[in-house]
Image 1: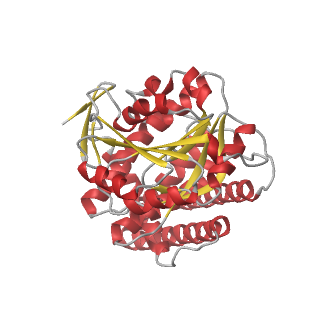
Image 2 (image 1 turned 135 degrees about the vertical axis):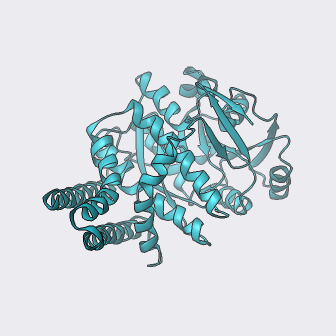
Length: 387
Protein backbone atom coordinates (compact mmCIF):
# COMPACT_ATOMS: atom_id res chain seq x y z
CA UNK A 1 0.00 0.00 0.00
CA UNK A 2 2.93 2.32 0.65
CA UNK A 3 4.20 1.66 -2.87
CA UNK A 4 0.76 2.48 -4.26
CA UNK A 5 0.75 5.69 -2.21
CA UNK A 6 4.12 6.75 -3.62
CA UNK A 7 3.10 5.83 -7.18
CA UNK A 8 -0.16 7.79 -6.95
CA UNK A 9 1.61 10.83 -5.49
CA UNK A 10 4.15 10.75 -8.33
CA UNK A 11 1.40 10.37 -10.96
CA UNK A 12 -0.52 13.30 -9.48
CA UNK A 13 2.59 15.49 -9.44
CA UNK A 14 3.45 14.49 -12.99
CA UNK A 15 -0.10 15.02 -14.28
CA UNK A 16 -0.41 18.42 -12.65
CA UNK A 17 3.03 19.52 -13.85
CA UNK A 18 2.05 18.44 -17.36
CA UNK A 19 -1.21 20.41 -17.23
CA UNK A 20 0.57 23.49 -15.89
CA UNK A 21 3.28 23.26 -18.56
CA UNK A 22 0.80 22.86 -21.41
CA UNK A 23 -1.41 25.67 -20.10
CA UNK A 24 1.52 28.02 -19.52
CA UNK A 25 2.90 27.45 -23.00
CA UNK A 26 -0.53 27.86 -24.64
CA UNK A 27 -1.32 31.04 -22.73
CA UNK A 28 2.08 32.53 -23.58
CA UNK A 29 1.63 32.20 -27.34
CA UNK A 30 1.15 35.71 -28.78
CA UNK A 31 0.38 34.88 -32.41
CA UNK A 32 -1.95 32.67 -34.45
CA UNK A 33 -2.06 29.09 -33.25
CA UNK A 34 -4.71 27.66 -35.56
CA UNK A 35 -8.38 26.74 -35.24
CA UNK A 36 -9.40 25.79 -31.75
CA UNK A 37 -6.59 27.72 -30.10
CA UNK A 38 -8.11 31.15 -30.18
CA UNK A 39 -5.49 33.41 -31.70
CA UNK A 40 -7.27 35.79 -34.03
CA UNK A 41 -5.02 38.26 -35.80
CA UNK A 42 -6.84 41.46 -34.96
CA UNK A 43 -9.89 43.20 -33.59
CA UNK A 44 -13.29 44.05 -35.02
CA UNK A 45 -15.67 46.94 -34.55
CA UNK A 46 -17.64 46.48 -31.34
CA UNK A 47 -20.49 48.34 -33.02
CA UNK A 48 -21.13 45.19 -35.07
CA UNK A 49 -22.20 43.13 -32.05
CA UNK A 50 -25.31 42.89 -29.88
CA UNK A 51 -24.56 41.59 -26.41
CA UNK A 52 -27.35 39.55 -24.83
CA UNK A 53 -27.25 39.61 -21.03
CA UNK A 54 -29.70 37.20 -19.33
CA UNK A 55 -30.39 38.66 -15.89
CA UNK A 56 -31.71 37.12 -12.72
CA UNK A 57 -31.55 39.27 -9.61
CA UNK A 58 -30.17 38.09 -6.33
CA UNK A 59 -26.48 39.03 -6.45
CA UNK A 60 -25.42 42.30 -4.77
CA UNK A 61 -22.78 42.86 -7.46
CA UNK A 62 -25.31 42.76 -10.32
CA UNK A 63 -25.61 46.49 -10.92
CA UNK A 64 -21.85 47.06 -10.74
CA UNK A 65 -21.17 44.27 -13.26
CA UNK A 66 -23.75 45.57 -15.71
CA UNK A 67 -22.52 49.15 -15.42
CA UNK A 68 -18.91 48.10 -15.97
CA UNK A 69 -19.76 46.23 -19.19
CA UNK A 70 -21.77 49.13 -20.59
CA UNK A 71 -18.86 51.48 -19.89
CA UNK A 72 -16.18 49.12 -21.22
CA UNK A 73 -17.90 48.48 -24.58
CA UNK A 74 -19.72 51.76 -25.37
CA UNK A 75 -20.07 51.04 -29.11
CA UNK A 76 -21.75 47.68 -28.64
CA UNK A 77 -25.49 47.31 -28.26
CA UNK A 78 -26.67 45.59 -25.08
CA UNK A 79 -30.00 43.85 -24.60
CA UNK A 80 -30.64 43.32 -20.88
CA UNK A 81 -33.01 40.37 -20.58
CA UNK A 82 -35.20 40.15 -17.49
CA UNK A 83 -38.28 38.25 -16.33
CA UNK A 84 -41.41 40.34 -15.99
CA UNK A 85 -41.85 39.23 -12.35
CA UNK A 86 -38.24 40.18 -11.40
CA UNK A 87 -38.89 43.59 -9.85
CA UNK A 88 -35.32 43.99 -8.58
CA UNK A 89 -33.82 43.34 -12.02
CA UNK A 90 -36.27 45.80 -13.58
CA UNK A 91 -35.31 48.47 -11.05
CA UNK A 92 -31.59 47.94 -11.63
CA UNK A 93 -31.81 48.07 -15.43
CA UNK A 94 -34.01 51.16 -15.24
CA UNK A 95 -31.51 52.98 -13.03
CA UNK A 96 -28.65 52.20 -15.44
CA UNK A 97 -30.30 54.30 -18.17
CA UNK A 98 -27.37 53.77 -20.57
CA UNK A 99 -27.70 54.90 -24.21
CA UNK A 100 -26.25 51.61 -25.49
CA UNK A 101 -28.59 49.37 -23.47
CA UNK A 102 -32.20 48.29 -23.82
CA UNK A 103 -34.07 46.23 -21.25
CA UNK A 104 -36.37 43.51 -22.57
CA UNK A 105 -38.79 41.76 -20.22
CA UNK A 106 -40.67 38.56 -20.85
CA UNK A 107 -42.63 35.84 -19.06
CA UNK A 108 -40.97 33.58 -16.54
CA UNK A 109 -39.67 30.34 -18.05
CA UNK A 110 -42.26 27.70 -18.77
CA UNK A 111 -41.81 23.99 -18.01
CA UNK A 112 -39.41 22.54 -20.54
CA UNK A 113 -37.42 25.77 -20.90
CA UNK A 114 -33.92 26.53 -19.67
CA UNK A 115 -34.43 29.89 -17.86
CA UNK A 116 -31.33 31.45 -19.39
CA UNK A 117 -31.92 30.13 -22.91
CA UNK A 118 -35.60 31.18 -22.85
CA UNK A 119 -34.48 34.80 -22.44
CA UNK A 120 -31.92 34.46 -25.22
CA UNK A 121 -34.46 32.90 -27.59
CA UNK A 122 -36.87 35.80 -27.07
CA UNK A 123 -34.12 38.34 -27.73
CA UNK A 124 -32.51 36.91 -30.88
CA UNK A 125 -35.21 38.28 -33.25
CA UNK A 126 -34.29 41.77 -31.98
CA UNK A 127 -30.67 41.36 -33.06
CA UNK A 128 -29.88 43.28 -36.25
CA UNK A 129 -26.09 43.33 -36.01
CA UNK A 130 -23.67 40.98 -37.80
CA UNK A 131 -22.49 39.45 -34.52
CA UNK A 132 -24.13 38.37 -31.31
CA UNK A 133 -22.56 37.73 -27.91
CA UNK A 134 -23.88 36.07 -24.77
CA UNK A 135 -22.62 37.50 -21.48
CA UNK A 136 -23.63 36.34 -18.01
CA UNK A 137 -24.77 39.02 -15.59
CA UNK A 138 -21.91 38.34 -13.14
CA UNK A 139 -19.17 38.60 -15.80
CA UNK A 140 -17.21 41.73 -16.71
CA UNK A 141 -15.35 42.20 -20.00
CA UNK A 142 -12.33 44.52 -19.76
CA UNK A 143 -12.11 47.45 -22.19
CA UNK A 144 -11.35 46.27 -25.74
CA UNK A 145 -11.97 42.58 -24.96
CA UNK A 146 -15.16 42.40 -26.99
CA UNK A 147 -13.45 43.71 -30.13
CA UNK A 148 -10.53 41.32 -29.69
CA UNK A 149 -12.93 38.42 -29.28
CA UNK A 150 -14.69 39.35 -32.52
CA UNK A 151 -11.28 39.28 -34.22
CA UNK A 152 -11.00 35.59 -33.35
CA UNK A 153 -13.90 34.83 -35.70
CA UNK A 154 -11.27 34.94 -38.46
CA UNK A 155 -10.21 31.47 -37.29
CA UNK A 156 -13.48 30.03 -36.04
CA UNK A 157 -17.24 30.27 -35.75
CA UNK A 158 -17.98 30.28 -32.02
CA UNK A 159 -15.48 32.01 -29.73
CA UNK A 160 -15.33 31.86 -25.96
CA UNK A 161 -13.07 33.38 -23.30
CA UNK A 162 -11.42 32.37 -20.03
CA UNK A 163 -13.05 33.30 -16.71
CA UNK A 164 -11.05 34.33 -13.67
CA UNK A 165 -12.96 34.90 -10.45
CA UNK A 166 -12.47 37.94 -8.26
CA UNK A 167 -11.91 36.66 -4.70
CA UNK A 168 -14.53 39.05 -3.28
CA UNK A 169 -15.60 39.29 0.34
CA UNK A 170 -16.63 36.49 2.66
CA UNK A 171 -15.28 33.00 3.19
CA UNK A 172 -17.60 31.16 0.83
CA UNK A 173 -17.32 33.76 -1.93
CA UNK A 174 -13.55 33.35 -1.74
CA UNK A 175 -13.84 29.55 -1.59
CA UNK A 176 -15.92 29.52 -4.78
CA UNK A 177 -13.36 31.77 -6.46
CA UNK A 178 -10.61 29.42 -5.28
CA UNK A 179 -12.31 26.44 -6.89
CA UNK A 180 -12.77 28.16 -10.26
CA UNK A 181 -9.32 29.76 -10.30
CA UNK A 182 -7.78 26.46 -9.31
CA UNK A 183 -9.18 24.68 -12.34
CA UNK A 184 -10.00 26.98 -15.29
CA UNK A 185 -6.48 27.81 -16.50
CA UNK A 186 -5.40 24.16 -16.44
CA UNK A 187 -8.57 22.84 -18.08
CA UNK A 188 -9.79 24.97 -20.99
CA UNK A 189 -6.28 25.89 -22.27
CA UNK A 190 -5.08 22.29 -21.98
CA UNK A 191 -8.15 21.10 -23.87
CA UNK A 192 -7.50 23.65 -26.61
CA UNK A 193 -3.82 22.74 -26.86
CA UNK A 194 -4.66 19.04 -27.14
CA UNK A 195 -7.50 19.56 -29.62
CA UNK A 196 -10.10 18.55 -27.01
CA UNK A 197 -12.27 21.70 -26.96
CA UNK A 198 -15.70 20.04 -26.79
CA UNK A 199 -17.51 22.62 -24.67
CA UNK A 200 -17.29 26.35 -24.00
CA UNK A 201 -17.30 28.81 -21.17
CA UNK A 202 -20.97 29.75 -21.16
CA UNK A 203 -20.28 32.94 -19.21
CA UNK A 204 -19.18 34.65 -22.44
CA UNK A 205 -19.14 33.68 -26.10
CA UNK A 206 -19.49 35.34 -29.50
CA UNK A 207 -20.66 34.16 -32.92
CA UNK A 208 -21.97 35.45 -36.23
CA UNK A 209 -25.70 36.14 -36.09
CA UNK A 210 -26.25 34.44 -39.46
CA UNK A 211 -24.49 31.25 -38.31
CA UNK A 212 -26.56 31.07 -35.15
CA UNK A 213 -29.81 31.58 -37.03
CA UNK A 214 -28.86 28.96 -39.62
CA UNK A 215 -28.57 26.40 -36.80
CA UNK A 216 -32.01 27.20 -35.43
CA UNK A 217 -30.95 29.90 -32.99
CA UNK A 218 -31.38 29.48 -29.28
CA UNK A 219 -34.63 27.61 -29.91
CA UNK A 220 -32.46 24.61 -30.87
CA UNK A 221 -31.19 24.31 -27.28
CA UNK A 222 -34.14 25.81 -25.40
CA UNK A 223 -34.80 22.64 -23.42
CA UNK A 224 -31.15 21.83 -22.60
CA UNK A 225 -30.11 22.20 -18.96
CA UNK A 226 -26.39 22.51 -19.80
CA UNK A 227 -26.76 25.37 -22.27
CA UNK A 228 -23.03 25.99 -22.76
CA UNK A 229 -22.31 22.38 -23.68
CA UNK A 230 -25.47 22.21 -25.81
CA UNK A 231 -24.41 25.31 -27.76
CA UNK A 232 -20.90 23.94 -28.34
CA UNK A 233 -22.33 20.61 -29.48
CA UNK A 234 -24.78 22.39 -31.83
CA UNK A 235 -21.87 24.06 -33.62
CA UNK A 236 -19.53 21.08 -33.63
CA UNK A 237 -22.22 18.72 -34.93
CA UNK A 238 -22.76 21.14 -37.83
CA UNK A 239 -19.05 21.03 -38.70
CA UNK A 240 -18.40 24.56 -37.42
CA UNK A 241 -15.31 25.54 -35.46
CA UNK A 242 -15.20 26.17 -31.73
CA UNK A 243 -12.42 28.54 -30.66
CA UNK A 244 -11.06 28.84 -27.14
CA UNK A 245 -9.55 32.32 -26.96
CA UNK A 246 -6.95 33.58 -24.52
CA UNK A 247 -9.10 36.58 -23.59
CA UNK A 248 -9.51 36.79 -19.81
CA UNK A 249 -12.70 38.14 -18.26
CA UNK A 250 -13.49 38.57 -14.60
CA UNK A 251 -16.43 36.98 -12.83
CA UNK A 252 -17.80 38.18 -9.52
CA UNK A 253 -20.33 36.00 -7.71
CA UNK A 254 -21.41 36.81 -4.16
CA UNK A 255 -21.93 33.67 -2.08
CA UNK A 256 -24.13 34.35 0.92
CA UNK A 257 -23.23 31.32 3.02
CA UNK A 258 -22.51 27.58 3.11
CA UNK A 259 -25.91 26.58 1.73
CA UNK A 260 -25.54 28.92 -1.24
CA UNK A 261 -22.00 27.66 -1.86
CA UNK A 262 -23.09 24.01 -1.79
CA UNK A 263 -25.99 24.79 -4.11
CA UNK A 264 -23.72 26.40 -6.71
CA UNK A 265 -21.14 23.61 -6.53
CA UNK A 266 -23.82 20.94 -6.80
CA UNK A 267 -25.28 22.60 -9.91
CA UNK A 268 -21.85 22.82 -11.53
CA UNK A 269 -21.10 19.18 -10.72
CA UNK A 270 -24.41 18.09 -12.26
CA UNK A 271 -23.44 19.99 -15.42
CA UNK A 272 -19.95 18.46 -15.37
CA UNK A 273 -21.38 14.98 -14.90
CA UNK A 274 -23.51 15.41 -18.02
CA UNK A 275 -20.44 16.47 -19.99
CA UNK A 276 -18.21 13.66 -18.72
CA UNK A 277 -20.89 11.09 -19.46
CA UNK A 278 -20.67 11.94 -23.18
CA UNK A 279 -16.94 12.69 -23.38
CA UNK A 280 -15.05 9.77 -21.88
CA UNK A 281 -11.60 10.49 -23.25
CA UNK A 282 -8.11 10.17 -21.80
CA UNK A 283 -8.12 13.95 -21.33
CA UNK A 284 -11.36 14.09 -19.34
CA UNK A 285 -10.98 10.88 -17.35
CA UNK A 286 -7.23 11.02 -16.84
CA UNK A 287 -5.83 14.51 -16.66
CA UNK A 288 -9.02 16.03 -15.20
CA UNK A 289 -10.84 13.26 -13.33
CA UNK A 290 -7.67 11.55 -12.13
CA UNK A 291 -6.06 14.66 -10.70
CA UNK A 292 -9.35 15.61 -8.98
CA UNK A 293 -9.66 12.27 -7.18
CA UNK A 294 -6.00 11.74 -6.30
CA UNK A 295 -5.71 13.92 -3.13
CA UNK A 296 -8.46 12.18 -1.09
CA UNK A 297 -7.27 8.79 -2.36
CA UNK A 298 -3.80 9.61 -1.07
CA UNK A 299 -5.25 10.37 2.36
CA UNK A 300 -7.14 7.07 2.38
CA UNK A 301 -4.03 5.16 1.31
CA UNK A 302 -2.01 6.85 4.04
CA UNK A 303 -4.61 5.88 6.62
CA UNK A 304 -4.71 2.30 5.34
CA UNK A 305 -0.94 1.97 5.30
CA UNK A 306 -0.13 3.42 8.69
CA UNK A 307 -3.26 4.32 10.62
CA UNK A 308 -3.26 7.78 12.22
CA UNK A 309 0.47 8.23 11.59
CA UNK A 310 0.01 7.30 7.96
CA UNK A 311 -2.90 9.73 7.69
CA UNK A 312 -0.73 12.54 9.05
CA UNK A 313 2.03 11.62 6.61
CA UNK A 314 -0.51 11.54 3.80
CA UNK A 315 -1.85 14.94 4.84
CA UNK A 316 1.68 16.38 4.73
CA UNK A 317 2.31 15.00 1.24
CA UNK A 318 -1.08 16.13 -0.05
CA UNK A 319 -0.56 19.59 1.44
CA UNK A 320 2.80 19.89 -0.31
CA UNK A 321 1.33 18.79 -3.64
CA UNK A 322 -1.73 21.01 -3.45
CA UNK A 323 0.28 23.95 -2.13
CA UNK A 324 2.74 23.68 -5.00
CA UNK A 325 -0.11 23.53 -7.51
CA UNK A 326 -1.91 26.53 -5.96
CA UNK A 327 1.29 28.58 -5.84
CA UNK A 328 2.11 27.79 -9.49
CA UNK A 329 -1.41 28.69 -10.58
CA UNK A 330 -1.29 31.94 -8.62
CA UNK A 331 1.84 32.90 -10.53
CA UNK A 332 0.30 31.86 -13.85
CA UNK A 333 -2.84 33.93 -13.20
CA UNK A 334 -0.64 36.84 -12.27
CA UNK A 335 1.09 36.63 -15.64
CA UNK A 336 -2.10 36.53 -17.69
CA UNK A 337 -4.13 39.05 -15.65
CA UNK A 338 -1.43 41.39 -14.36
CA UNK A 339 -2.75 40.93 -10.83
CA UNK A 340 -1.92 38.31 -8.23
CA UNK A 341 -4.50 36.99 -5.78
CA UNK A 342 -3.83 37.64 -2.09
CA UNK A 343 -1.69 34.85 -0.57
CA UNK A 344 -4.65 33.89 1.62
CA UNK A 345 -6.32 32.33 -1.42
CA UNK A 346 -3.69 29.56 -1.56
CA UNK A 347 -5.01 27.56 1.44
CA UNK A 348 -8.57 28.07 0.19
CA UNK A 349 -7.59 26.72 -3.20
CA UNK A 350 -6.06 23.69 -1.47
CA UNK A 351 -9.28 23.21 0.51
CA UNK A 352 -11.36 23.53 -2.67
CA UNK A 353 -9.32 20.73 -4.25
CA UNK A 354 -9.87 18.48 -1.26
CA UNK A 355 -13.61 19.18 -1.27
CA UNK A 356 -14.06 18.52 -4.99
CA UNK A 357 -14.73 14.75 -4.70
CA UNK A 358 -17.39 15.49 -2.07
CA UNK A 359 -19.08 17.92 -4.46
CA UNK A 360 -18.88 15.32 -7.21
CA UNK A 361 -20.70 12.86 -4.96
CA UNK A 362 -23.50 15.37 -4.28
CA UNK A 363 -24.28 15.34 -8.01
CA UNK A 364 -25.19 11.65 -7.68
CA UNK A 365 -27.84 12.33 -5.04
CA UNK A 366 -31.12 13.44 -6.61
CA UNK A 367 -29.31 14.75 -9.71
CA UNK A 368 -32.62 15.87 -11.18
CA UNK A 369 -33.04 18.60 -8.57
CA UNK A 370 -30.98 21.76 -8.37
CA UNK A 371 -31.22 25.44 -7.53
CA UNK A 372 -30.39 28.31 -9.90
CA UNK A 373 -30.34 31.44 -7.74
CA UNK A 374 -34.03 31.98 -6.91
CA UNK A 375 -35.32 29.13 -9.09
CA UNK A 376 -35.73 25.49 -8.06
CA UNK A 377 -35.33 23.26 -11.11
CA UNK A 378 -36.54 19.68 -11.42
CA UNK A 379 -35.45 17.42 -14.26
CA UNK A 380 -38.08 14.90 -15.35
CA UNK A 381 -36.07 12.79 -17.76
CA UNK A 382 -34.60 15.38 -20.11
CA UNK A 383 -37.38 17.88 -19.43
CA UNK A 384 -36.93 20.94 -17.20
CA UNK A 385 -39.73 21.79 -14.77
CA UNK A 386 -39.93 24.16 -11.80
CA UNK A 387 -40.98 23.78 -8.17
